[in-house]
Length: 383
Image (tube, rainbow, N blue to C red; front, side, top):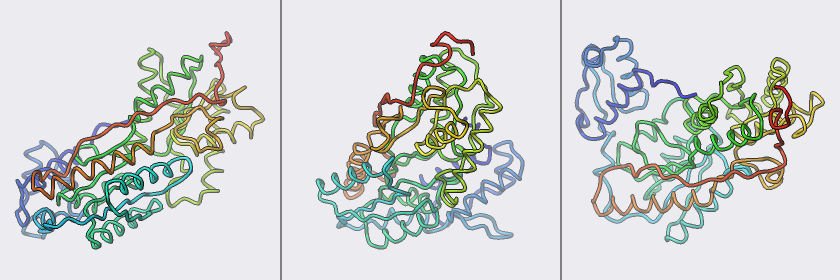
């Protein structure tokens, strides 16, 4: 579930906004740790953490004995926009798969061609370092703007922060950053998750396990877990937090996938042994639905006769089997290109220096497949 924003993060985001809007222009000195601690009513450890985060992002320089100063590069790109705009745009994606990504790329490619842009594609394979390198490479090729499907992570990518501060047109897809007005396009993940879990509840399921990677720092996952909670709250039902398995690593970057899959399967099997009342799973990603199905089969049970599964996304070979949230990826990609084109035009005309363009929501739908069946309550059995 979403957690209360840490105090250092609140200070960090306020300073970030003050740098972007020019309150602290390049070369200017920021308040000291002591001054920030007094202004926000926090400890110096907290204020120091906020300044350290800005320094780690390459936005300020901390000089011992002198203080913290805004880097000249933090806003310089906004004033250096060329008069003649490039017709090249870049698309940086962490991955493109059959479950999610192929249609997104198709939408970006199709709309780019329709609007007369040439498209440069870079893949990051879930690496924030590769994402940073791709941003720098594409900027060096004089792209007019970037569409980014960001890497999961607890911190904003410093390269994305610098784009935000510079005024470079950029649009995020399938993500948005809380506290930063970066243009973005995504599904309403919380509402979609709530609809999916409500479907299970209304089918008679009450003990519904959540299968998720660590949600902290990845707003998409956070919102899906929030949607699970909202469904129970709306139906005035108690939430058993021990059924939230949110430390799974299947599909996470940097993980040996076979061992991660087997480890996650064992965790699900252990959960079922400890909670025999569980009758359904809500998997926030397709690959975790596969983990759930294999865990059920490993204990000699069946889907959906014994356990129901609902997930986000499903590739063509499984879209008829899994009850899933179908995101309109192609429309997301097309919308991202149109939004980027608007930002590029605004910047070329000098009409706006705002890097943001709002958070655009693309509707999704719940597709009923064969992985769900009436639960114990619907069947008239005791839970």
